[in-house]
Each structure stands twice: as C-alpha cells, then as structure tokens.
Amino acid sequence: MTARIIDGKTIAVELRGRIAAEVARVLSTHKLVPGIAVVQVGDNPASSVYVRSKSKAVAEAGMRAFDHKLPDDVSEAELLTLIGTLNADPKVNGILVQLPLPPHIDAQRIIASIEADKDVDGFHPLNAGRHATGLPGLVPCTPLGCVLLAKSVLPSLAGLEAVVIGRSNIVGKPLLQLLLAENATVTVAHSKTRDLPGVCRRADLLIAAIGRPEMVRGDWIKPGATVIDVGINRVPGEGGKSRIVGDVAFAEAETVAGAITPVPGGVGPMTIACLLLNTLRAACAQNGLPVPLL
Ligand code: GUN
Image 1 (tube, rainbow, N blue to C red):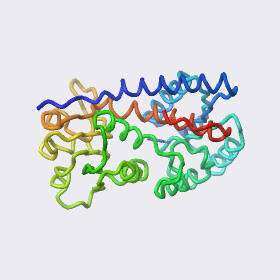
Image 2 (cartoon, rainbow, N blue to C red):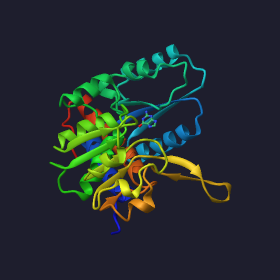
Image 3 (tube, rainbow, N blue to C red):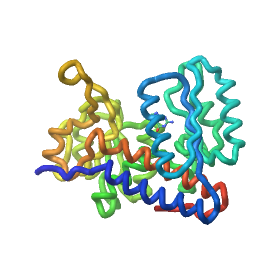
Image 4 (cartoon, rainbow, N blue to C red):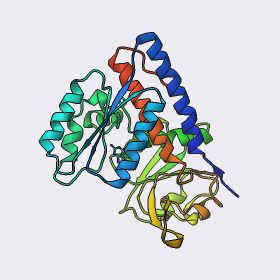
C-alpha cells in the first residue's frame, strides 16, 4: 500500500483564503481590522524564520501585524510592561510571544500575563482550563491544525483509537482535549510509556509530537492508519547541508499507512493558518461580533 499524502500546504492555503474573505467582510461591515502583536526576544534563527512567516501570512490575510523585537538581555519586567501595553491596546486583538524565551525569563509568568482573550497561542492557563472543561476559548494552533488535517481524510473521528505521542502543554495535552471532543478514544503516550511500538500499533490515528527525528518506524503503524507528523527536526544531509525530517520515518511509514502528512508541508503550514483563524476569532469576540467557525 502507498499512503495518501495529506497535503497540508494546499489545505492551509484554502483555509487562509476563507479567513481572508471573512477579514474583508468584517472590514467592510464593521470597519474592523484584526491585529496581532508578535513579540520576539533575542535572535534565535529558527524563531526569526517562524516570526517572519507569521507576519507575512498575517499581512496576506488582510490583518495587521505589530512586530516587537527585543534584545536577548531584556528584563522580565520590561517584557511584562510591553505585554501590559499590548493588553490595553484595542488595535491589538492577539498577542503571541515567540518561545523559547531566554532562561532568565519565566515563560509561564509571561504567558499568564497575556490577556486570556488575546492569547491567540491558546497557552494561557485560563484557556487551557476552558478547553479542558468544554468552555469556549482559544485553542493552541498546532493541535487544531492536526485535527483539521485528520478530518480532511477521515469522515469522523468518533470511536477511533487515537494515539498521541508526546505530552507537552503546546501539543500533546491540547490534542487530548480536541480528540476527546471529536469522540475518539485517546491514549497519550510519552517517554516513560512501556512498549511504545505496541501502543502505536493500536492506533487508527497516530499523531507524533516527540521532537526526535524519524523515531516512529514503519512497523509501529497499523496498516491503513492515518499518521500526522508534528516533528520538525533538522538533521545532517548530503554534501554538508542539513535537511528537515519529521518524527516519523516517512519512507517506511508511507508503505503501511493509509494517509500521512509530509514534513515539511504537513502540519507546519496549518499552524500558521490556525493562528490567523484564532486572531480573527479573538477580534470578533472582542468586538461583540459572532465568532466565525469557518
Ligand atoms: N515556538 C515554537 N512553536 C511555537 C508556537 O506555536 N507559539 C509560540 N509562541 N512559540 C512557538
């Protein structure tokens, strides 16, 4: 069997088109331009790439991006002051502080200082709690993208065995909530899980968010399963160059799986599209407008 490739790039382009149309509609009917502040501390090259592509996508959707680049040695107090200003600014509907932050800054304290209704990353404890209890709130972008990709090839997730590898606050835990809300039977596996390959082989839907290059092998996958690969790992390639691989050994997996996301071009583009969606939703909610589902 050769798996169907889940083309995240194309699905993200379609979603971004629907978002841009809705942004144009709220502009013409309500004179509202959704705005997001993107805060970067220091010069981490990977963060700079993400921040640039986020700001570009925001502009392409017809929204406003307010970029704040702060030096590596900025104090926690200065960063908290900036977030206070952004919290109070009605033009700023969403606030994203790019992670990781330097070690002298307490990331949890920074996340908690963001107004929960502007927390377009969905990382604030209030949004995590709302999500866990089924209340409306902002949901982290990468997990949301994973579920949209899974639903692009599966008519329903209800009753499926879903296995998530990884238990981070950013991906694994919110995925548990999202998949439960879709009525899947969910297992969250992690580094201490016994017989990880055996657990994975039970999965109709396998989502890998471990951060280890090509750890999930072909024989960990149930024939016909849907595989979503969240990993973005840089490894040495040919001729001294590096290349990007996922957490799944793609060449092996595509001979077993029913459908699989590539890396790059799978989950990554969906994360940005979902950030735009969260920003639009936050702007509508803050202005008393119906929140678009899209
Ligand atoms: N760093 C890596 N991924 C993310 C993300 O989704 N949001 C933020 N704020 N930082 C990140």
